[in-house]
Length: 253
Image 1 (tube, rainbow, N blue to C red):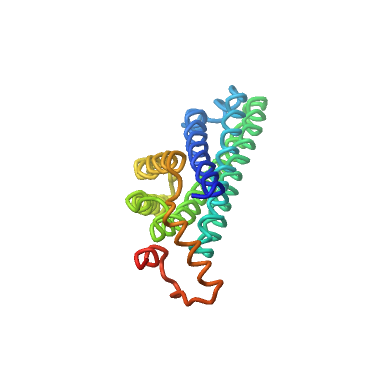
Image 2 (image 1 turned 120 degrees about the vertical axis):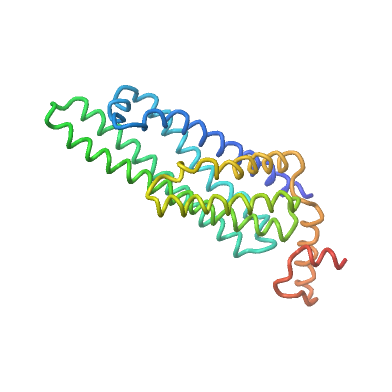
């Protein structure tokens, strides 16, 4: 494996770890404050905790998009369209998570105003707060949906090319399909996708296993060599079967 691909593998593995860790930490920090009808009072009483949670969410949003961006130079050797698609959808995911975080910060301002307001004015603040909670929920659901599409694209490329062991990329595909079910259930039941946390567990575990694999072992050298040989053959005018998966070419050698 060339040094560039090795650095890409390590960087991608680290981004997977950071994205998962910051997302879980943000949930642990913020979820107790956003539970129940008295969430405005809870937010107003602990602005520092809200700020920490928001910072964690911003980091998670950036690293989510960064994963696909880091993978792009390697994946484009096998399927440029899929590689670009994964960047686009994971960037959308990052934008949606950013919207959710901005909604949280707006909620903090509303909560502080509600705490300082006279009694008769508080129901109005509650209505506004509920609207921002709903916006945050929609943004999170949209972000998870974009994540499912973006991740499926690069797992399909990994599966076809054997950049990582097929059991690992197949696990990713299956776990993403489970998360897609959670997204659809959340959409039709008008709830947050976090209500189906158990369906998200397989992909969370898979990403940590994939991160460990990329950091310690990197991408398959035979898959990368096959892609390089195919590009060289194409450059010399040697016919290459259109749409042939990388592993088919390797098998023929």
